[in-house]
Length: 100
Image (cartoon, rainbow, N blue to C red; front, side):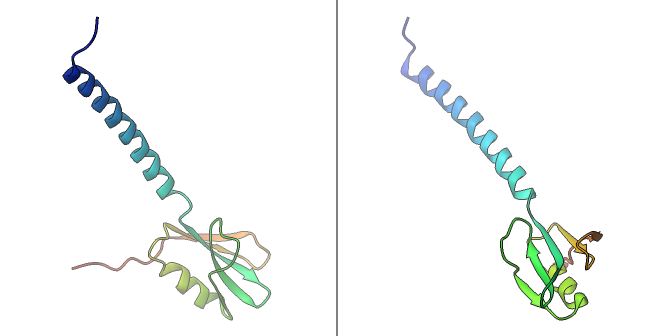
């Protein structure tokens, strides 16, 4: 027995909506990952590097300057500060501007 066109459309829309919701959920999950910014030791001082990046965003002479830069990132969810030997010193939250 063949379905009516309206039934086919309704079934197709429902399956498309489920697929879209599944994709949106996956995108939210991916967006929440990989937003960490690391402050690491570098040959020329201290580097600010996004997680997964091949190159540093910027290099600073002072560790405090690098930390300030990393914490001011708009997209960072965490700032991971490393010691000179490469081990993790501490995790901090980035600075967020309060909107009025």
